[in-house]
Image (cartoon, rainbow, N blue to C red):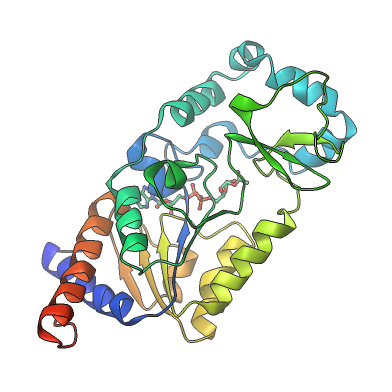
Length: 278
Ligand code: OAD
């Protein structure tokens, strides 16, 4: 895609987002690639290197939660067994938000982003400063009670016995990150579905669109009449249903897009005219 073409597509997307009333962003691992966290699939992806986790991971946890906790509390052992996973965990722990994350903070501030539905467990949207974030696959910085869904910051949670018990209801505690085979927690799933159903514009950012239910949200929103813009250097299964596909990195494109939307707001405020973009 040429720079001219990309700029034209950014103009189109900016006007559509500017005109929308309820904007949602669906985010995947590509959004954090520029923060140094490898994606899951594609070249350099962690699953490409070490294979996808066992689809029965959650069942295995439920069968022997103590074993999971022993490994969790002894990362050195896991690091020796899987150096690639250790590198991935280190990248997650050291990552800082990138310009794409900060562009979404601006978008929320100017009232043009209702909800971020993120599949990322890195917590970078919250760290960047977004307030309305639905972490559909959980957040690695938290533990969660499987019974009452209370979340606890890992750094503040006192582990006395393993497996630990929820201080609120005595239920079983695990990491908040959703394991393969684990149902999406019902509270966050309900938030995601409501946001996706009610939006009239959706940004689809750095996701391969292969993991459900998140992958179904763009098609559902499109069927409800929403405008869909995808930002991704590669085409994905979602590219076929989107209205605008911008080939590029979110860290490059999102700051340009948000600046254009801000221009539109300023121009309409100063001159009372409609956005001039296209
Ligand atoms: P994937 O690794 O499947 O896809 C990453 C996408 O990001 C690809 O489409 C890349 O082309 C794109 N990409 C790479 N660099 C980018 C950049 N700088 N800017 C924009 N896009 C870029 O990651 P997800 O779609 O997030 O689940 O995967 C979904 C789920 O699969 C993850 O949440 C994880 C995994 O199994 C769990 O762990 C539960």
